[in-house]
Length: 429
Image (cartoon, rainbow, N blue to C red; front, side, top):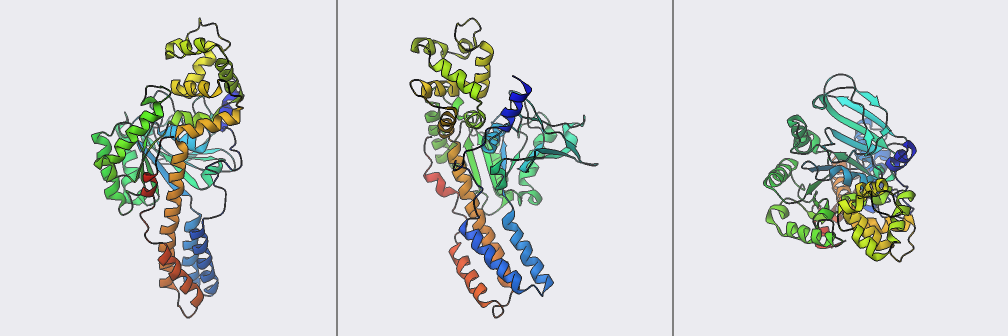
């Protein structure tokens, strides 16, 4: 694969206008109305610098994207799922332990990477696209000496969602594991994390212990703002075509597990690898899949008997062994089987194929859960900001603003029943 191909893969395809997850629209009604009232109050108090400054500070809170932290054990699929949401292969993900530092992914007009050591001056690293994600130049510094990394990327979703990848809680580096734990649970930082997406396969004692820490240290609303994802869901069914059905059954068991329901608002199955590749599939890869799907059914069935069979160099098929290995790397056996089933007898172009893969991956349900979380965050911001505004202003000076603020405050309650409501509607992709 050429350097140009690697850059294209890391950059990912641009989402079509109107796709789910297109978050470039206006503020939601609650946030928009709260901002209008705060702005009106700030204008009325323009001659009072102290009050006007604080009101403008409250306004700035609505500009902050929803901050989503990804947590879980090593190789739980955090980076892959993050890539699926970004729509590009930015977070490194392969068979080894990749995420060794806390990494923030923010919106930027151009790709940029900054490395922040625990001591000394920060430096910028070229945003180099590698085979499995961005390669960050740590200048030879041990990862234990890196506090965090900032990545700016021109993905529309990052305008409204800042995504944070963290090292596995059982990372080989004890410092990295501890850093991940402290990042999401210490009071100073937790205030900046609106939602935690916790990736599980089977709920282990370590998972429960960590989720308990989150609930205790993040305080009120932490359960509603914690989403459990049965990650790598395609592996639950050993790559079979019905793997996501098995994953949904597992997610349902998690939703019925008291250890989960008391600590998480939602439990969803997501095939992260399928979701990631749905966003970054290249035309040549789609062409290879079409060529395989066009083979005689008996040949295709034999090809899909096992990973070793699919990769076998001696097979006489119109797609090289190297290209087949690449497809397995990008889609997994479940993804390959799904693609061939979709393409057999159907004239799907690349865009239609990727749309169907995204739908079947389960990632759209996660996006909807995050949309609900944004709405809940908006209401919390509105209540806090308007409550503070009413403490600052005098009713007789801005009577209409004060009355409208009280009406909106009444309409924003209750605040912490937002995310769990999605749980009742969770269904198999």
